[in-house]
Image (cartoon, rainbow, N blue to C red):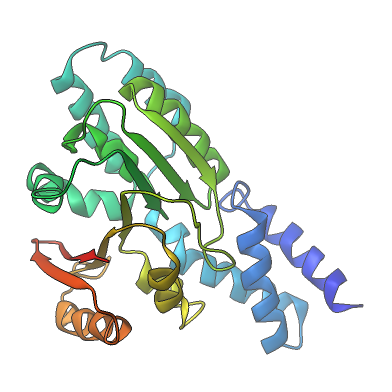
Length: 267
């Protein structure tokens, strides 16, 4: 059986799982091709691909995913900003990355966006459920918000959320491992993304930072593991980030939050 045929079978097998049914086929193909080159047996490659997908994606989705019910709950908040934030918090608790950010959400974006020129466009990469934090972002009317992630059903849901928020938004699937978006934006959010992607491609952090077409990047790293352990993570991540930008004439500011380490890069 040819390598292409094996890869097609691998993708079909992985996406037959309910856990990865709506995952971007491009991402499955990228990782599956890597694993097939490492292993003799197709069965072993399928298992390894699923394990890698769990590390970079599946582990972050927690609890029951109910996009239709969540959208209905958001729509029912009407013009009540307090009710909208309450529902957004409840939904964001279903994704490990945004759940960690809930305890710092009231200060997070006000701190990161303070002192910046007027923001007219945002690009949120590997966004998860982070666009649901828009009600906490000090954004002017008319801002555009582009978001991408690897789950088709998730980006479909987020597209409908933009309507609820009254924001001109566009959510779409993307495979950052293969291509970095080059669209212009005032601010790019690359939140806790580099460590995940570097599990597949060790060079991806540098590639993204070099390619992103924005004068301001907000790049963050987790201050703790998914299990809640710290293990000197911020020290290691800061060292790694400084190495990635060592030869760049960029202005870099560091922000320490309880659950997240953020570098605001002014290109």
